[in-house]
Amino acid sequence: MRPTPASSPGPAPAAVPSPSSAPPVRGDFLLATCQGGAEDALAERLAALLPQATRAAWRRGIVTFRLGPLDPPDDFFPDSVYARAVIRSLGQVAGSDDADRVAKLVALVGDTSFDAVHAWCRDPRTDVDVDAIRRRIRAARGLPDDAPPAAAPGQLVLDCIVDGPDRWWVGWHRVANRSSGLPGGMHPVALPADKVSRAWLKLDEAVATFDIPLQPGQRAVELGAAPGGASQRLLEAGLAVVGVDPALVDPRVAAHPAFEQWRMRARDVRLRMFRDFDWVVADMNIDPRSTLEAIERVLSAGAARGGGVIATLKLPDWSRAAELPAWLDRFRGCGLVPSARQLSTGGREICVVARRAARQPRPRAAVTRRARPRRDR
Image (cartoon, rainbow, N blue to C red; front, side, top):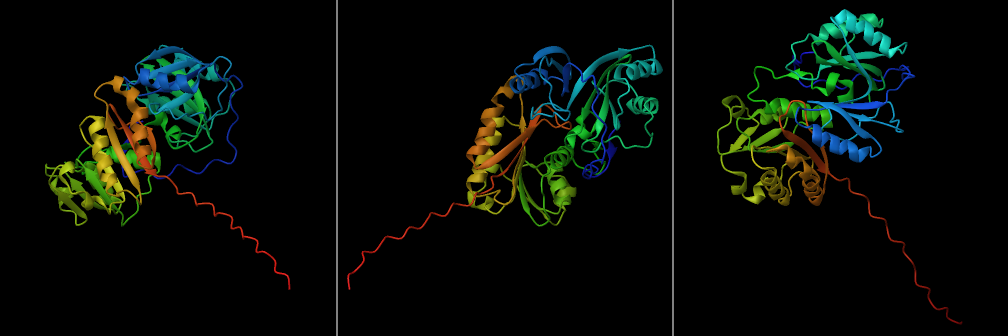
């Protein structure tokens, strides 16, 4: 499925009242897809979450684990940061053409009734019409052809991952959240022609993935704003935005009445000027430690009290992924609760959304009255 130019997609459809039952043959392997190059980082996270599972076959963009005695729930979608899709694998099918492979897929999954079909390519560069494959599979399973590609929460999904021109991985999962309802966990929006940079698209996916509650009238500051893609997305959400960057932003962003630019480096801005911002946004092409230092400085001024931080941490190489726990601890040290995910629209980087921890009401101390001595009358 090719993404379509559009604004941020709406919420996933409402849960179906009677989702299909899981296959009687559940599959002995867990398969997770990821960005090419993230396989080791993903495998390390999954191994920590499933210590009894053993790593099995893997290819660029795919990691599989033999589950052994484990039987995760149907909607298993762990917080693995790097996984785009997580399914139960039933194996592979190969054949001379799509019709041959569809017939073998049908034989492999048996009589299980599925609510939806997801089809996508392991390698986005593979020149295959996955929409045609999806339609063939739906027809073979007796499902209507006009159903949307995205599945609703609770639905049982038949998964087909195109491994190459003549081979498919086959599996299934139950939709647990927005990401697992999308084919391959891929953001279904292409960059519209009127957006000034891909930062618009990455923020668009972050807003949808993390359910970020951007509210009209809030104020945001973007560190390293030029050329202004993320600021453009914030402005479209109704926020007032200040972009901090020595380089000029795109004239289309600069002309917006709710936008202001401070043409300087973030470290040269006086702290008190950061005080009244609800959101701090940062997507800078610098080392993650430098990004974190810049964010911590802004937070020390009292920013992000009404919202939080949306940060992109660049990975100069994949070995730096091991530092992610320490980076997240730095957000916690600022009183924020961080969530992290490698977005499908991003590069070798991790998106962190950190929000203010909810304040717990203080328990009222019990009041004890001191007993007064009784007077004899």
